[in-house]
Amino acid sequence: QVQLVESGGGLVQAGGSLRLSCAASGRSFSNYVMGWFRQVPGKERVFVALITKGGDKTYYTDSVKGRFTISRDNAKNTVNLQMNGLKPEDTAVYYCAADLSNSVLITRRFTSWGQGTQVTVSS
Image (cartoon, rainbow, N blue to C red; front, side, top):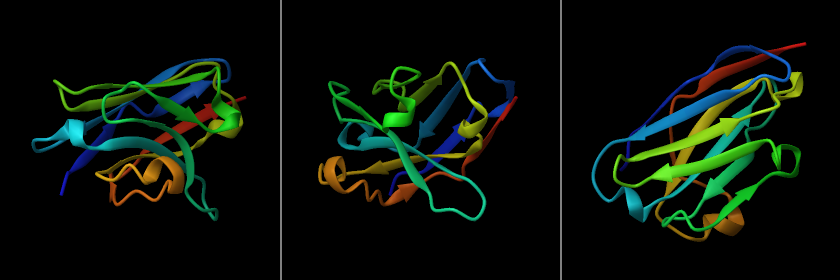
């Protein structure tokens, strides 16, 4: 099973930018669909973005379209989330996720998760 470690979270003012990174251990990183989710206290974890195994297609939740960009580097076993135009409502713990099955393109039910990184956007 792939191990995932997120980094890059922090405190930023509204309108600012952050870049989250997720490092994956092991081989065959390119066999995984990769995603980002976020969770606020008391609420369920929700989908933010995902990228296909080859990096040719990306999908976003409506609230981040045009502001966030997901990308991956299969040679470096990393997936990134560039977040621009941050809003206070983007405040959450952000989780990296991985799955071998293309079914997650529909279900969003990933099986491997990182430990999360906190993003706080002040108004």
